[in-house]
Image (cartoon, rainbow, N blue to C red; front, side, top):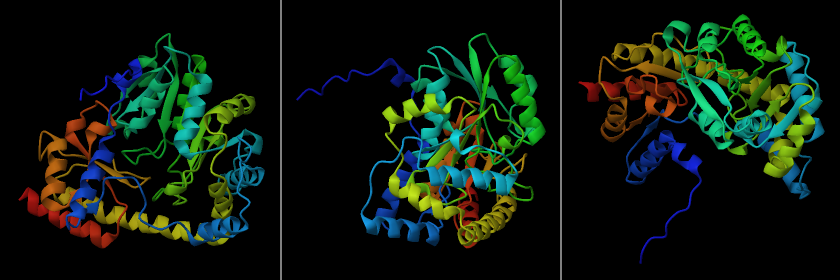
Length: 389
């Protein structure tokens, strides 16, 4: 039988595979064969959902009253997020500006859908989280890479943004802490980028989904000093609720009603159970658990970073947030994808090659996620040592 011919939209030619998910699939295949795989490829904390969150969901589900919520999210959760910004960061954010979404990806979709016309370009640092550029393309925008390197902590500078800016540029998307590099933008740096973008009539989107996971520096938010930017956040990383698929968007004043119309059609609403569970994420008991886990991530970072350097991996800009180390492997290989395949097949260690994160020297880099225990990280380093030897 002849295979049917697919009739696809033109945009599909620009949507690349998410290589880390392909790598995860191979890891699962090897595990099914009885192999022990140390997972350092995917950005998912290994801790279980915090008990207060699970208990809140269980109590709510037991009542059986599970229906749609308002498209912007339930009012108690939007208010809890606003209080969190005030209590943790001293940022005054009105609940009316907060939109609860199905994951941070849902938040970025809404921000882009509300602001992007066909042909508009968005500037993104390279390397960066791969889905961002594909979401821009999905809304008929053009993602334009701004190459960043260790000398600027893998973050875009005002000079680089101004050089890349074109008449059709709609805005800039940045992340702090960043994926895949774990680096931060300071408040003055975000402020300077915002001033430059706004002076050109553009919009700034700040990805803060790893907010709270910082080491040696205080966590912060762009919302502390500016209210005319879009901020994307998530319950997945710091709050440890990946599978609950819940995030939020803080929109500038005046955008909420427009975004509500989009949310009504895109999602109807975020998961009702996840929203009810997330109310418990801000309880003192849960925040204590999350802070202890943050300390555990700091210890893991301090274990893996010197171990990788001892093996010949270069880390020119040390990560201060998230749970990633973006390492230069040029002293070991000229192709990080080949090295990643060797590590998973020969060492049972899964790490993500730089090809997932852009076109800026991708084959010279590997991303390691320290989302497993210190003992497993030490074992991974020893396995890698044997392969490289």
